[in-house]
Length: 331
Image (cartoon, rainbow, N blue to C red):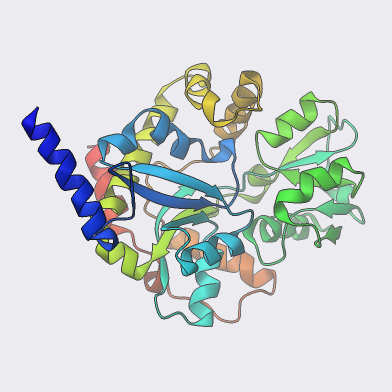
């Protein structure tokens, strides 16, 4: 008991005396503040790692905030409002090209496909992407990976929709429900919930159509990564274990673990969302980003006219720790 009390005192004192050595302290516990681009079953492994106690095993807990767009997530990281950003790697590319005294770097990739589902107002069993020509579509913010990936799919299909871009990322579903646009891209579980409520119909998967691309990644400022290498490794280990758990267990089992993270969503919608993402092979096994994937991402950004010049993979992507963790878990 004395040892436990002494440990608690030391932990509290350490938090009070040296606040910069850790990510943060809350009730004597180490807290990592993560700003996620949006809240979705698409990011199931991160929530699973929390639900299964994997973060706790690594000696910390996470505090999630919703950025509502990669630009806002990056702003949170640069301002110190978040320790780690979880969003599309394009935000890191743009920051690098703009010049940064403390350049953010990607240290782990979670998703390898676009997680957006295209939702229409009518049921279309034999949906053809060519039918989008001239249609009004809510597909995100120009310069963001969701928008650029959708644009990439449309160009490959030879169609030219009319994009509605003045609606913020987090407001697109509400705008579509308010009769704005002919189609809207939504993440899960929003898409399944929307369909279950009879408000629209899922007609296609953007990720299935676009192919693999490094879609959502973890990144932090270089100074944070240098000072908190143990936290970075712990985060990667916890989430890699969660990915493995997700792959090795049935959808019902996984859905039960996620239920508390989506309070307004039915367990059936969570199951449907998990099935959607499992069917398109949305998640990586190894969180170390591949250079070939990074090259394809820059191809997509360049095609969208949003890339001033190419960025060297090694300048903004770190893979050593993620690879080490993967080797440990899958040995």
